[in-house]
Image (tube, one colour):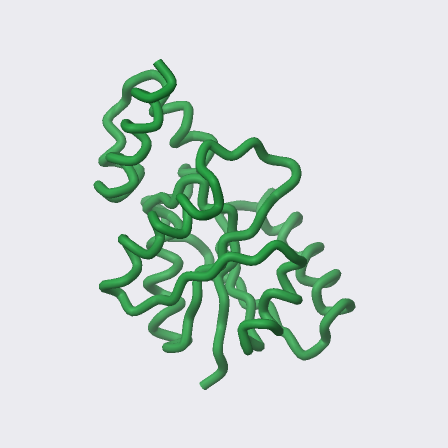
Length: 160
C-alpha cells in the first residue's frame, strides 16, 4: 500500500480536516498530516504549535505528523509518499485543487493526487470560519476537537 500525506496549514485543525484524515487512513494506512507554510495566510499558531496540536489529536489515530517548508510534492518525496490526499468541499475547492494537482504532477510525476469529497456535515467548515467563530465567542465544539479549542482559547486570552 502506498504511503500518503495530507498537507495543509491546519491553522487550526478542524472537524472537516479530521473527517478526511480518518477516511484517508482507511485507504492509506501509512498516512502523515503535513503542516506547510502558506505565504497567503496569516497564521494564529506557529508551525511547532500546529504540529503539537495535530500530534495530540492524531496520535491515538496512528496518523503521523510532520512539518515541511517546501513545495507539497517535495514534502511528499522527502517523506517517501507517492500520494497526496486533498479534501474537496465544493466547486471552488475543485477548481483550485485540480489546478494544483496538475501543477504538482508536472513537478513530480511520481506523486499522484487523490481527492476525497468532504462529509456534508463539515462542508461549511474552514479554518477562517473557525477563527471568526472564536473571535466572536461561539461554541467551538461544533468546529474543532477539544484540545484545539483549548489552545484557541489560550491564544485569545493571551492576546487580550
